[in-house]
Every structure is written in structure tokens, then in C-alpha cells.
Length: 428
Image (tube, rainbow, N blue to C red):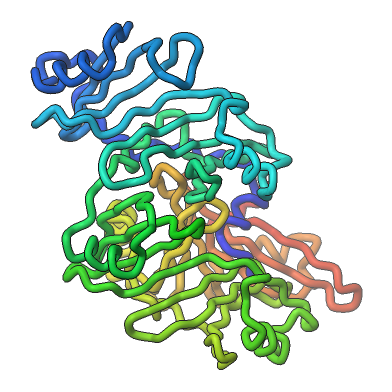
């Protein structure tokens, strides 16, 4: 069965307009809440700023303003600046530049990406950040067939993050720079001395660090005791060692058996050694393989790299509230969405969140015996009553829920997918 993101894309382009995780508390022009230290720091950093308005977001005072002093613009530029309201320290500023003003390395990387043919927003968001992180991040917004993606690039052209459906109100608050703890910082200095930190996230169970290491994006996870658990590096097919390719080709999941490589990652782990994880797609279903650098192949077992490691706190809270008693197996990003695989009430479910952290849907495979009577009755009353059941997914979204039923006519090999609500009504 197709995964949740592909299921949703097959039904609609992007209709889930959900509030993101903006952390605004008091609204705009709350001057009485902005500390004198912030006002002093803002005036020193942006002299002559115009049309200034303030809002509080957690412990940050955020100024929205126009300023002619940015090097990125020949005229007045819309900008937002974040300051710690306690000590007045500047943390981050978001502003705009034209696509043509991007560093050449970013333009070249985008031109070589899978999104090069998408429609590009002529204005690019730029994040200028303080602290021990990559000081500049460029966010290119692209769209195609109703889908929207935000592509985050470092100045040297490394695509560090892809986010879907962030929404017009997304404020980049998740990208406020954080400093790694001393134990994590010591590990990075020892094993990745030349790496640049992209992001530091406190996650359920520990801390995730995103870095660019000699032009390569890597994700590291540390437990609550600051102990390294794993490093994940996305790799291209051309990066796979010959023993890995040979093991895949000799398996029942080979390309000769109509399996297609969808994604590949290299894991270095504290508990399970080093291995490549290959995500494969086929008409018979998706499968994940675990292959060591020496070519030892097995089916990948979710959770082997740390269970709920790397799951954002808000997503983990949503899962525990919505699916009480669930066990988080793993998480990954696919097409800009965060997909979290859980085990709940005897099913393995895939819970999906968009770029702003909002839930967009949950999907899990079900048997014919799991289908409500109204659903099976609707199939029996349809033109496909004599076709063979070939599998089903139960899908929940903010827009409602339905069962996606795959049916096959054996004699002709024709296939059809029906989308039926729990009450038996057909969906388009």
C-alpha cells in the first residue's frame, strides 16, 4: 500500500489549511511587554527602522518593520527580528531578497534539484541568525499542481531541509538558534570539527543536531544523558557500496522484481552498528531493507535507531494524546512532511505532520474483516462487487476519515481504488 503522503496527494493537492505552531502570546504592539533592553538593542541594530510593530512570542520580543539598511535590498525591505526579552540579545532576523540575488552556489544547487521545474516565488526568505549555527539560511518557496514546498539552503548550496505546507503564518520560530550542551558540543568538536550547525532541536527523548559536514547534511541524535545514539546521512544511489548493491540485486526485492529505490540513508549507530537503509516501492507494497557495508541483508525493523528519537516534542504530545498508549517506532521526512510510525491498538500507523508542525493525517493498513459493515455494503452495491479485494488503508485527516480500498479484476488485471467513508458514502 502507498504511504500516507502519497495517499493524500492522490486525493487532493493540498487542502489542509491548518494552524501551525506559531508561539504568539500577546498580539501586536504590546509595547508595555517589550523590555527596555530589547528596545535599546533594536535601535542600535536597525537605526532608522520604520513602521515598527511588536509582538511577544514566548520569551521573545519580535519586531516587524521596514528598514533600508539590509544589504539584500535596494529599497525598503520587510523584516522581522527576534530578541530575547530578558537580556535584549538579538537571535534572528528574517527578510526577503529576490531570487536573482541568491548566492550562485544556491542557484546552481536549485537548478540541479528535483524542484527546478516547479514554479518559483520570486522573493526568497533569508534567515540571519546569531550564535554557533550557520549564520544564513535561504528559503526558496516553490509550487506545483497545488503543492507547496519550502527549500532551505545553506550559502554553499547544501539543501538542509525540505518542508511542506508551512503556511503563510509560519514565522521560522523553530529556527531560532540554540547552543548545544557541553557534552554534545564536545562530541561534535571531536568527530565533526569542521561541521557547521544548522539546527539544534530538543526532541522527545533527547536532542537532534542537524549539521553540514564538508558539504554533506547529517542528522545526529543524542539521548537525555548527552550520549550519541546515531548519525543519519542521506545518500544517493551512486554512493551505495558495491557489496550493498550486490546484496540488493540478489534479493527478492531487486529491481528485476519491479522494486524501485525511493530513498537511501546511511546509519551509524551506537547500538546496532553501521548500515544502509533502502526504502523500496513496488505494486506489491513498500519495503525497507537493512544492508551492512559488507552486504549482509535483512528486513529493516522500525525503531532500531532509537524509537522516538528525533520526534519533535509537539508531535510526540499530539500522538500520546490522540493515540494513547502508542509506541513510537521511528520517524522520517518524506516530500517535506514528518512521518512518525507508531504501534497502536495492534496496528502500525503512520502519523503525518506538515512543515509548521500541524497534523495532516494518519494512515494504517486494515484487513477486510476490519472494514465497517457500511463500507463492505457500499462495495457490494458498487459496479466492482465481483472484483477481488487487494488491500485497504484507514485514513484520518482534519478533513474527515475514509477507507481507501484497492480492488482488482483478476481476468483483466484491471485495478480500481475506492474511497469510502465509515458511513458507506463514496468520496471523490
